[in-house]
Image 1 (cartoon, rainbow, N blue to C red):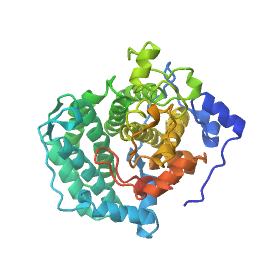
Image 2 (tube, rainbow, N blue to C red):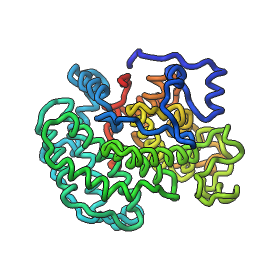
Image 3 (cartoon, rainbow, N blue to C red):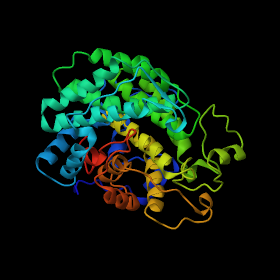
Length: 408
């Protein structure tokens, strides 16, 4: 493991940060006076110029993992080998684009839902493989997959359309950013940008009042698409909604007796809030709105929180000071029970549905490895799960991209 560490804040300073619902590390504290102007609601504005590639992984991070893989270093080489051994890394991978992707609840009906998600992950996989190997066959495969969809898709329909658009729309920009800014030939890049702007962004930018993982995934897509499109207006709108949802998704004791709610959600009474929190009436730091539903959906929400924060950091408008403490506590709380700690009777009726998924690497790397905050349960779970693979929705290869990655 990397030895690059920043010592934690003093206990008093950390306590103050927790009570404020924000996590401010030493480096952030020094830089606060240099922050760009903020909107009246306190949301940081989009960068004056976007950094590319800059969705979830930046160039320095890509250079770091390339060097580690070439050196055969653990855990990156093993993670890379696992990625390339998957179906997503095959040079014979064939995209299956649909004109209209129709997804009902739990993908029933499933008309193009799985195909779209898997093709997006395959494009991202090949983009990573291209950058690490410099074998242009992988870049060409990523382009082939993205071109197939940009020439075909016109809409997402049925009840799960917003979530499906969010999942696939979170992954496409990761692949597209790497190819557009590190490979020399993509003639149809503008057609792909038009696809993101016209087919994906309108479905996600206005959010959802469904379970929190929906809106968080949708905002991840909106943020990534906005970076690719250099769209500062959409970026700001998505970040504002993301910040509201994040504080309403993860509870901190400093929130008061009840969790925060999203403006306009219609959750006005304790009974309404308890029902929305899956019947959970005892609120403790790190509990999420979906903990008592199951850890799998909770993992979707936590992952999206970490992904947007990581993209914002690459873009120079770091959101970790605003969401980091909620992310740290959510990871730690879920990791504790994912590791097998007995569930108390006051939590979810004494039973939780485990299955958090490969979602801890990004947040753990940012908060523990870069900032030095203690995260014992999250560290244990993260290291047990390596190499983290994919959930076949929108999470993929994060041991490779973010394990002990100090790059900024």
